Each structure stands twice: as structure tokens, then as C-alpha cells.
Image 1 (tube, rainbow, N blue to C red):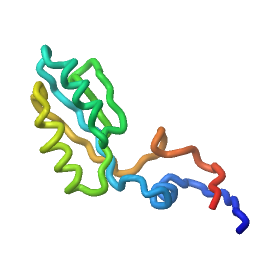
Image 2: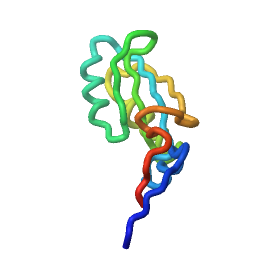
Image 3: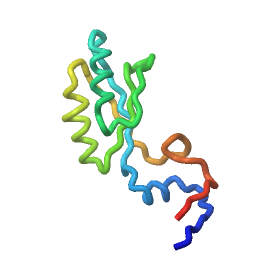
Amino acid sequence: MARKSINIRNSCSIKKRMTNMPKLLAFVDIFVESPEMDTVLSSLAQLNHLEELYEVTGEFDIVTLVSAQDIEEFRDILKNKIMKIKGVKSTVSSIVLKTHKGPKCEENDKQLTL
């Protein structure tokens, strides 16, 4: 069977559906007890649903990008995994509504092979 290549504009949402990517992305900002920073970072790095993990300056200590299939799975990850890590004081979450640019959304006008 021959493969077809087509151009897709604004293809992020289409590619997301076609590749079975998680349906929910959320930035989770984490406040950490200072002496536990290395332990928290190490524990977070082991979680499957963490797409990105950053130690940062500013209001928060750590910023993560979490993926989940739905809001229930996200709640479970937050409540039963992230918040259970020794040294995590609190979190602030922001659900991604739409990705316009970035590693989770490839540039427009890329070739997609079907």
C-alpha cells in the first residue's frame, strides 16, 4: 500500500488525536522545603507522567509539565504521586487549554505521512 503525504496547517490538534498523545497537559508549579530539593527533584524525575521538569528561580521552586488522559488521571497524579513526595509543600496547577507553539506542537506546514 502506497503512503500518502499531505500538508496540514495548524496541525497540532490533528496530530495529537492521530498519535494518541495525552488529552490533558498541565503545568504544575511546586513549592518545596529547601532541605528536600534534591530528593523532590529525584522523585519527580521518576514519574512517568512528567513530560518536563525544571528547577527555577522566582515564586516557585520547581515547574513541571504533566500529561494525563483526562482530569481524573491528572487528579490522581497530583494527589497520590506529586503531593505524597516528602518535601513537597504545595502546588499550583494550570491546565493547558491550547498549545500554540512549543515542543508539544510541531510547526505548521509540516509533512504528515499517512
